[in-house]
Image 1 (spheres, rainbow, N blue to C red):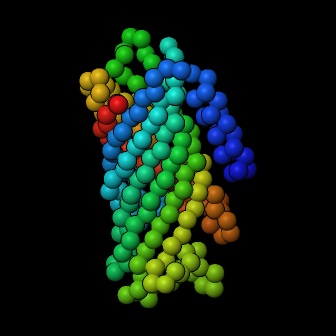
Image 2 (image 1 turned 45 degrees about the horizontal axis):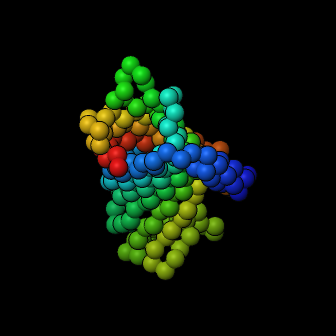
Length: 201
């Protein structure tokens, strides 16, 4: 299922790029990822910073489709003495709507597939990650784990000028977990609200 999703996404993106000859545009932005909801991210991680890169493949009167990639970084804060953080890697497709009456306002929807990687240094702690089959596998003095899942969301950007914009968005990620954690919403869900600024190139 995951491979099929990526194959379809690749061919859709390639087809759209080949079908248009207009000038291509990039958006580059930074944002603050704020975890929300009743899930492990809210209690165990603090958002630090996020980066966005978007590529506008074409433009129509109604919608501007974009290929995008975001990286969010979170600091681990749940257990004292255990240091580390987590990365959220989010390749996605964005549909940005063009509003004739409000040309500076750019609402959008997004769909993608995210990868959540955490790396914790627990060398100075007697920290139990679960026995006999720990969820987070040891790697020397560090404990690392990677999960993934589909993400979707929505948001809106406002063009302060031709090149500069401000933005707010909401991301919803459902991790594809196995074993005892599967089906547990507390462990499966990652919800973030993002506040950012960016430049259109």
